[in-house]
Image 1 (cartoon, rainbow, N blue to C red):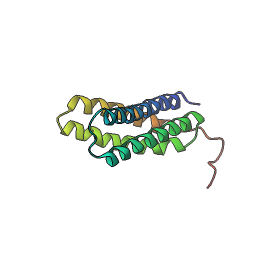
Image 2 (tube, rainbow, N blue to C red):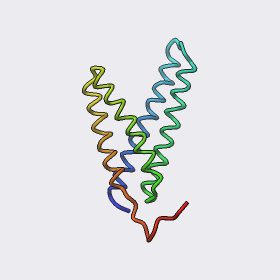
Image 3 (spheres, rainbow, N blue to C red):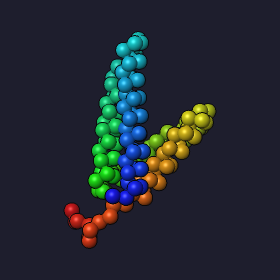
Image 4 (spheres, rainbow, N blue to C red):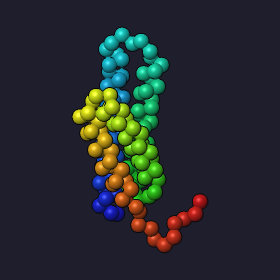
Length: 124
């Protein structure tokens, strides 16, 4: 296994932990305040949990030297790059720049973590 795959896996795990922590925060905040739109909060929490689990599976793919981790990681980070842009555009420059920097590092690591195959790639 290449060292870059390990780095990519750890970066993706950090992203998964971040998504899970946002879900926990939303649940805690909803329980401690007057909840106006429960269906929207539930949808967000489910989306965050599914995204977190998906990123953990992608990290496992990097560590196993498989291709399936890269697509999910790239897609999730392209979405996060858009979020970073809108954070910067909305006046939250520091948060947007930090998120954007982390996203770019993760994207580069994910793209560089090309598995070493033995012979030809298996066909579907």
